[in-house]
Length: 275
Ligand SMILES: Cc1cc2nc3c(=O)[nH]c(=O)nc-3n(C[C@H](O)[C@H](O)[C@H](O)COP(=O)(O)OP(=O)(O)OC[C@H]3O[C@@H](n4cnc5c(N)ncnc54)[C@H](O)[C@@H]3O)c2cc1C
Image (cartoon, rainbow, N blue to C red; front, side):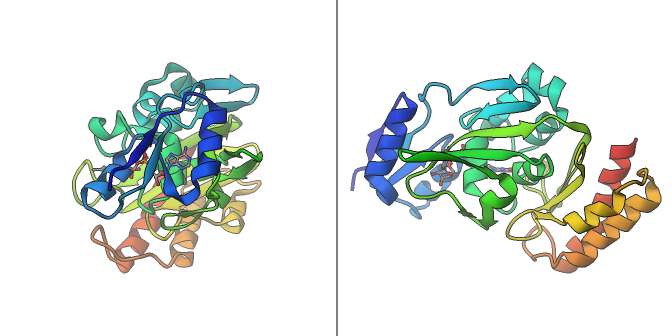
């Protein structure tokens, strides 16, 4: 069976194709995830809708107190973009540790969030930053927090006729850190990742790669309310996260091992935040 290839250049055209083709039309961004599935015979789409040439999807812009990042902005651009580095360095730090330059040159922020792999780096970072995504369809537009976007492994709330067009990141953080703990190679996905952000609304800590979706506990983060971060508080929050999470076991570490790593890595992220 041959695959029909669509290469729209406008937002309206993408949304029309998405509405017309429904589940028969697979969106392709950087293709780094889809390529693996297709090369292994797991996926054979009837039609593919490339987002590569859609005007505006590659834009990065500051909009008042927020940063707007188009869905097709690559990991590599986020790693090096001068505005990103100046306005929110944790974004650059997070995207810089994904896989290797070959993957980062192609993979996109829209692709990684829509993909919702439990062991990807950016989802935990975006949740800690309280980022939202814009989901558009021919019949409308809605904004969803990344926390609500990802439901479980490879499961999101994106409807069949919707496209993730943009990521919006608030710029109210006074400090933000991303830590990636690997157990195999330098290019591997995390065994445990921790994103910690001190923002005007309070502390936000998200732990990735340990469950079907990144774990954030607002009641535990609230322990920091009105208190200066120090090693005692960092340890208290790290221990509480480790006790609350029931980690998965996979090739990167057992559940018991991950529990110990979560306590240490959350503590270290919070100590980094205070430094
Ligand atoms: C060898 C290798 C190692 C990797 N290591 C890591 C790692 O350490 N850390 C990490 O975070 N990631 C890692 N990744 C990358 C990651 O898992 C995904 O491959 C990548 O982020 C997907 O981005 P993409 O733009 O290539 O998406 P694609 O492969 O094009 O698409 C992914 C999925 O999202 C859908 N989609 C894409 N864009 C949109 C959109 N705008 N709206 C709605 N749906 C959309 C597609 O239909 C598809 O289902 C690795 C990948 C490879 C191949």
